[in-house]
Image 1 (tube, helix red, strand yellow):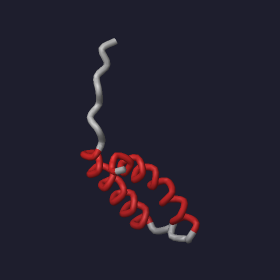
Image 2 (image 1 turned 60 degrees about the vertical axis):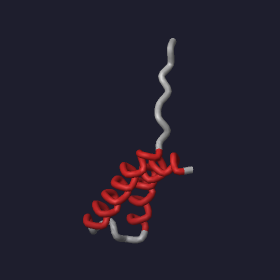
Image 3 (image 1 turned 135 degrees about the vertical axis):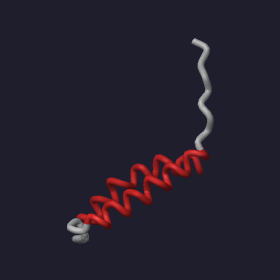
Image 4 (image 1 turned 180 degrees about the horizontal axis):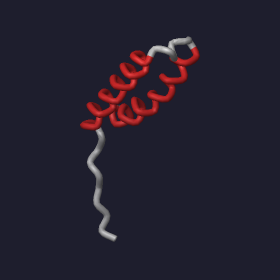
Length: 58
């Protein structure tokens, strides 16, 4: 379950942008930057839960 957190946080960034635009806060750049920064940092933090890559021998 934790392996899905990184892609989830990165996919939530455009959803956050659309949501903020719909509720009328699109004029406030601080809201966009803060939300994107927090979601990006959370996604980067959760990369430690990703499984290690397996190398193929082909």
